[in-house]
Image (cartoon, rainbow over all chains, first blue to last red; front, top):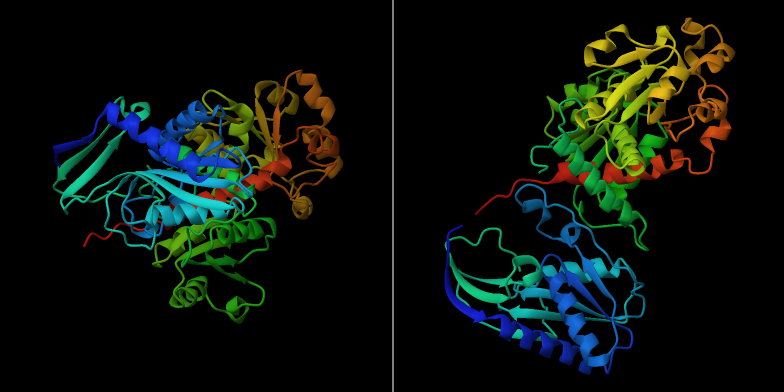
Length: 188
Length: 310
């Protein structure tokens, strides 16, 4: 896949501000941190959830539970993937029953990942509420799904892709738009 | 990674990377089995036939449960009650099943090589659930899952296979797999039940259980097939128990922890004593739980189809 940088959407300072705002909105919507928990969707939703939880702790002085969800087994494109997707660990170290959960993902695109994540979560128990927080909403949904907390809404053309990088994984905080010759393998 | 696993006919030829992928995937499936809803939709739309030409309760149920946990549709065919008794051949039986649009066949058969024979001739994917005294790969994989939990790694570890190696379908699968993972394997039992050719696989034979136990980190105890008692392989059950029965006294004499595996069913008081099988920390029943997770991993990994790019 050949790619060239077209545009830097968010830099490190911008990332901090966006995560701060998402944290504030989540707490505001929940009227505090009561029963609140975050679930990061692998891969980049996981570090993003950690970052949001840190901000919430600074705001409210309370550490909320954070889990990690791997949705490989719930994907509807399992049978058409190249090779076999590797099953990675799901770690939800708390009882989700009656919790107010916020699913966290880096990019909201077709909505298929979110749909799979909701289905996966329901197999762990019955939360009271599930909301969705994303850093980037890039449009072009294929499912009736929307983000409740959105970092940035963008509209990009076919042939372009959005790439989120987070310090915990990529050593840098940024969101860039890249020109991409092929978008095969890209997921939302 | 797991690209290229389209069937599982035996452990022979599977390299360390593939086995490690299967064990890693199994560990994730084990966690799913402990959830409130121990089921995932991964194999929705996939139909699996469990074709058992030989009696087996444990293996068949374990496969069936694994299939259901993955949301596959399952049909069970056993030799009794099928057209096999009307003279139909194995191939015709399975071709008829396949004609009903089955994606995957799990087969247990009394003839060595039955699963290979089938996989060469049918479109559906094939998993060997035991072919004669040849291989039983998923049993070996569940042994390895349990061993990995107890020994944490395989490199340089010593595993003893104890008992009737000649008639065991678990022995060869254990040997191929353990060697691929970097472990050493020794067999121990009466000379009548250890094949001479086993040395060609780089496996040493030992006829003294105490000596063999002092060598190993783990022992896999094979069932003495009591129905063969009259075939002259052993003088008496009592004699077998005295020489090759795994007892607490024998294990205590070694003075360090040895992991004890048993594929079952067990003849208590013959190849293994109850105070070994039921000892605190015994992993024999955990093996059964691991069996479901391992079979889920195998079925999941071989069910993927190549992407068709439009």
